[in-house]
Image 1 (cartoon, one colour):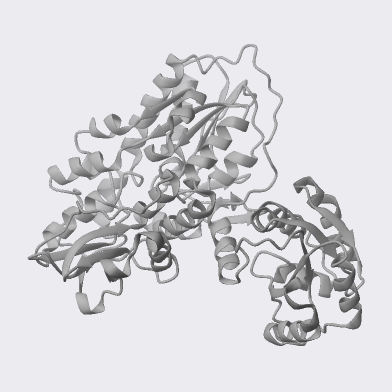
Image 2: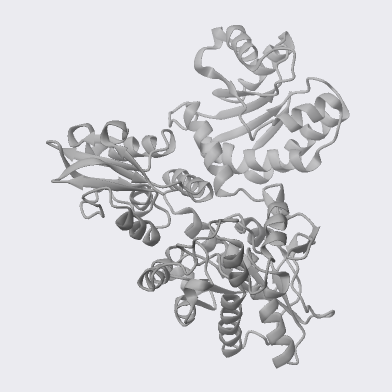
Length: 562
């Protein structure tokens, strides 16, 4: 179940002398982000002094401390004890290795398979926190509360308390079975008990694999599907019993619990709540399921949905995302922990984590939410405006933000210097011509440093490496006034380059390219000018140039056509 890695193969053991205070955070950051290490093990005279985790580093970035502290009070086992490791991992869902320490010496670590989605979210949040000096989810939640017209209710669950209850009760009721495993560690009979119906897991497993999203301008929407378990339309999971002419809406945002990952359409929290509203009130209120099978992608929907004062936005968050200011701005921030703990046979209604629960848990959660909303008068929409507005029409999520920031770091674009006014131009440079040279010279009459972002389209006549080398050689006499780098994944993308070459319009991609450049590239690099240069002279290229001219000034950039 777990793999023991001896200390000789643990790559993140450092002597305290190699982990100085003035560069400690930078060393840890590189180990986590670039080398994919789980933790830094700090030793002194051959003894384990302490540990630094990804969470420790993120708290350092968000806390304004001068020094990254070494955690000297950490959990460990003295031998390769699978039972103790299982207990540790049950209580720490975001940890994927557990140190083995004997006589003060690190003998190695016990590892388990890590969840890719959790790790990616951790890394994304860490990268963004480093540069924004603030925890990503807290920042975005605060921004939503400051900008939305909807009345917002936040819910969280204290996962450690729930997992402790499961551990005290002997762990999951589905563990230790003798039957063959069918899916996600459970046999068919155990799935039948979890789902409350025989052999339904066959359809669930099949449809679960077909449940997916598509992303446009950074906004995740569920692809339409029609199944026994999942029906999705208009970008949402279907909620049963919606009224035809609603007077108000209750819109749910959140990860798997909200989306109803392991239940039928009629068994989601939203469908349960809709039934209660239909039966217990005379108000026509529509419950909307905007959940996703992802820890944070639902933020893209919150930020870009059209909401009004009559709407109630119910958002499932983690407790650590809520600050005092956040709590003041929302209608309420409530815990669902006691609701989970009140279920007598809880261990039979949860899979691997509280987020993955069944219809019985959903019914209890819906009951709790119904009473909370009723108690606060949130079903009443009298005097409230029904005019819908959206905060923005695109979204830069933490994963995209972190990828761009990593790209900037690796290309030396985040270094602070006194180079004066900065400008940028995106080029195919296939080939780099005298006209390009004249455009660069014209741009340098406006700026002190010009960044040339060279498209990474692999279907051009010359390779990226060759094109960049040619550009550098042609502009060598200009010194450090000109910097030529690959455009990366999110600027002058392959889709846009190929759309221009093949004269196929891709309006949403072009708009998002400009929005990303204005918000992220220009924002972090301090770019004030964007220059556009026609290379192929066709309608699609003209459209891209017009997008730059139209959108980028909204971000404070001056755009000039050369």
